[in-house]
Length: 304
Image (tube, rainbow, N blue to C red; front, side, top):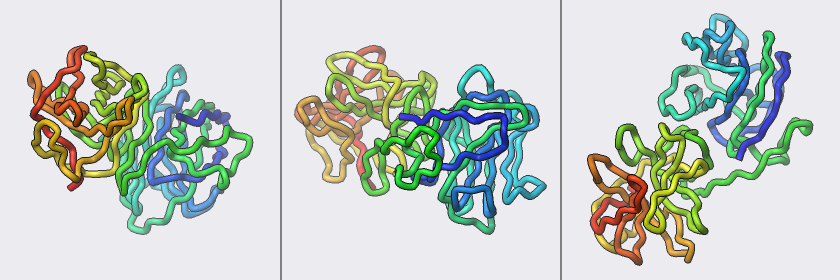
């Protein structure tokens, strides 16, 4: 679920309260997408600014308190487009700021502030001859009671499930949130995800290169462009078999009949593929090659 908004060719930020230490968004603009991180809903110090596609879409920088020189910069030719949405994420934690592209867990721009401040709001704008269309993930925006710009579309409630520091984050079309949990490998890293299908919430594999999460159900492999990604934890994987479910196994979903499902993985055809553990069937099902493949011996995801 995303919030849609537009920014004119005007270097004037529109501010929104943040719900967590990260921001996920897509932007369609020819150049100069500006994001501010502030303590309050206004342009005043202290403030971090992230400029993506500045200097005629040739460079991206991080700036603090509008002071030069910029605290971080990198050449990013043609990083933005006026014809299509491009996805990005920004993450901050105690002054450590990182900026990355959708589907890429590694950042392309970072800064560690020796004198950090608390971020309570973010702002967006475009300028220098550019207007922009934004899609901002609703999970990144705090509740409507603190909403600071009534003219913009109101934020929607977050759709994720808390499990201590573990959460399932809504995502779609290859978007890979920061702190996404790695779980497998084929020709690329696979991440732990889940998606709805036929009334069930099924654990499966998120494959960024395919912009999808794959789940197993009814003998087949099903591709889902909307899904959730497990984030914010470092689980362990332990070998087991049948319906021997460890007490610290992390619940990953449920069947259409409300049976709890867990996250499992197996080595199959040279891959390490993530799937669903269904205790009543005493197997781990993985989605692979269009089919649902069952393994009585598998690894299951547990809390450390």
